[in-house]
Image (cartoon, rainbow, N blue to C red):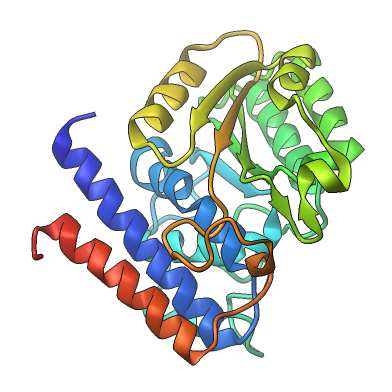
Length: 282
């Protein structure tokens, strides 16, 4: 990845994080922690990896994305807004009555959302079905799904992976946001899924462990996934919950809590400083 591309992606990811804070602050609720940890991969997907067009959100040949960890909708909405699916100003309507941006993604309301999610484990299953349908219809598209590491405690996730391997869904890419925290604490304390990489490989995936905040590693993983034939790919991202906002980083309490006015101001100040540094305006 050249320096210009890296800078552009970093700028977009920082703006996405600002959108996440704006949305959850305005709503007074939501899930900032996991949205922030996945902001980098969501940015890469929509601005570098996937073939999607805001002017044609229902284009039949588009790549598909399913946010299996649907509670992290603020992260998806922030990136969709940056991509142009709807105005960025709309982010502050999150969870409000009549808004297109509900607490979990709604494919019937929100442009750019390919599947309604919320119940953990179901998103990956639907995405695997999309990948099989694309194969059988001869469509040259790819299907991506993003899961939380707490979500993979659900047995349905592993059934979906077994299904994907059985049907040789090499157009299917599973992404796991391994920030090590879920609502009740660390995933190790609640119900440890470790070693995750070994399990993914045992279920027949091409397993690609990376730093989920390193765009060069993200790019390499997606390029490898595209070249993989006969099996699904699984990108296992090591991330930091609350990434980009100092007081939220690696703090389980920010799984599902919105910032108050003071916290919002501090978080936005930190992200604004990051944005200025990337633009060379220090």
